[in-house]
Length: 369
Image 1 (cartoon, rainbow, N blue to C red):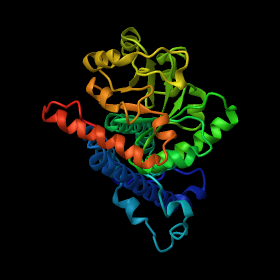
Image 2 (image 1 turned 180 degrees about the vertical axis):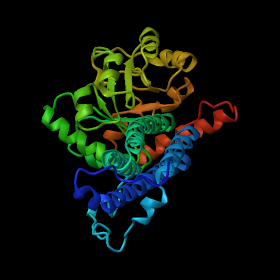
Image 3 (image 1 turned 45 degrees about the vertical axis):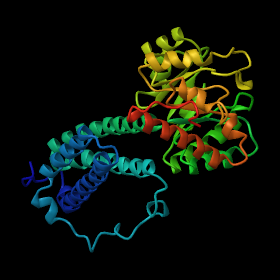
């Protein structure tokens, strides 16, 4: 590896003439792949703190470096490269970490595909290595997306579930500005075309602020707008089928109203569950309130992240937290608030304060809020 390789015996003079260009192509794409991997590696190291993902990036970079020998480097002609001054407006800025990572994964995957094809004229072993590396990069991309989504989920203690509103986008953005990191788009009555348009815009907003975007009920619409996951009710498709359709890198949540539904959702592999409705709520007119006893049960028995949901607002938040909740979902409390950003900040401050008190094992007083 890395030693001089001559272009294979040509059928005519054309392949001999092409040798310098082939070497320049291989050199450029080895550089491109290694640079893209290094950008991804830095996020794995400093952004998600995963030694396993960092090691995978580093191994692939080192494998590519073994093929980057002097013959290919000597063919480089940067001043004469017609592509060095070409650019595109989208390359000048990135709106989010996710967009930055996606751009660089695409860069690496395209470079590896070029290496795979042009190496057939130079060294088939390099082509085979590039092909296998490309599959590894696909896997790395899925693993990193899944890892990031789970990390954001674990850090999220407030979950906004939307309701129909003429100010939908401004309310959600205000909540995101207040520190929200998890949003579910829930719209039961709109046409699918409207749902897709709204969901696509909300997903863009969420990713702009580093938040997760979850689609309610509909796996097909979650796929259509590239959502981070789907939230399923008890009457929706199975968690296993949703996972099969969405792939392993996206999140699947499930609503539960009693201990049996909770245990079944956990056994079926839900990433998180909703626990409620804690109080009667117009968004669940057919569901009796599960009450605080179910919250207490979840606090003792749930082994995955769970969100107390159903009629929770600033007036009863203290009771829900006293019952053992560490995460809550809100609908009307934020969607109908006069100042959604401030209400979001209030919820988050109360949840954060509770976490601090519990981390030092301080008894939370009844007058907590």
